[in-house]
Amino acid sequence: MCDVTLVTDGVKITPSGWEHTGGLTGEFLVALTDIAQVSTNDDPTALVHGLKAGVGLPKTKIGTWHHDGVEDYFCVHHDGPAIVLDLVPGRTYARVVVTVEDPAGLAAKIQAEIAQVS
Image (cartoon, rainbow, N blue to C red; front, side, top):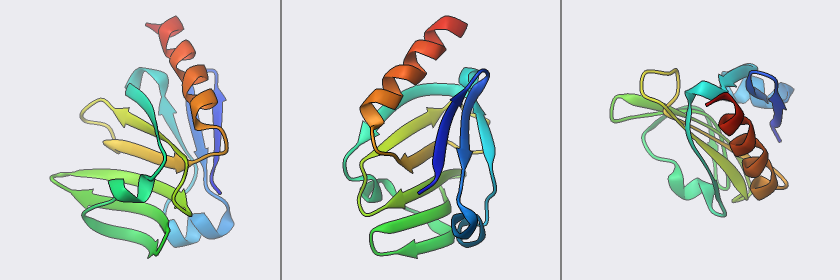
C-alpha cells in the first residue's frame, strides 16, 4: 500500500518498491495549496477510467490513468477505502486516489491543514 504522509507543506505519496515499478511513478508531493477538495471513497476502483500507464489488475489500480485531457493517479488495493484529493486545474494530476486505513481521519487532518494555510 502506498504511504500517505501529511507533511508541513503538503501530502507526500510514497509508493512501495513494486508500486513504484508497476505504477511507473515515484514519490511525489501534493502541495496543500493545490488541493481543491478532500473526500473519501469506499469503492475507489469505480473512479478509474481512461487509458492506463501502470498496473490495472482486478481490484488493484496503481499508476496514472489518462482521460479527458487530464491524468489521475491511483494507488488502490482491494476496493478501498481510499482518500481522494481533487486538485486545482493545471497540476500534474487532476485527482490522486490512494487506499489508506483511515481515510476519514486523514481527510479531516488534511482539511485542517488546508484551513490553516488558506
